[in-house]
Image (cartoon, rainbow, N blue to C red; front, top):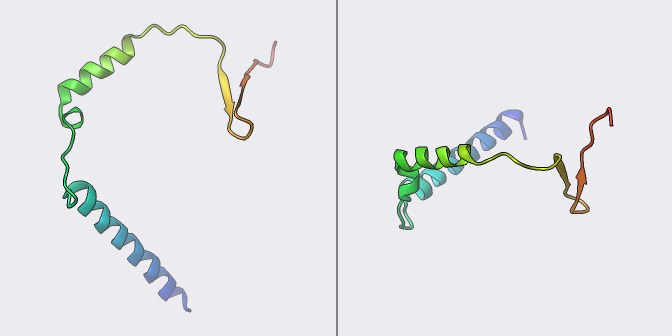
Length: 79
């Protein structure tokens, strides 16, 4: 195969994926509707205000190790 055919195949697959995305998500060919929480700007602003108002009290930062599923406390280099 030549490089042109490979590039054309990849570009074609992106076009097919985009068309499928638009038909399924935006045109809603399988039915459904967009939730009001996405379309309502007032709801989004009120939710954002609520999240920003929460008190920020917590312990030291923690990093999740996805392999062993254990939490490890991150210590600064001076301690």
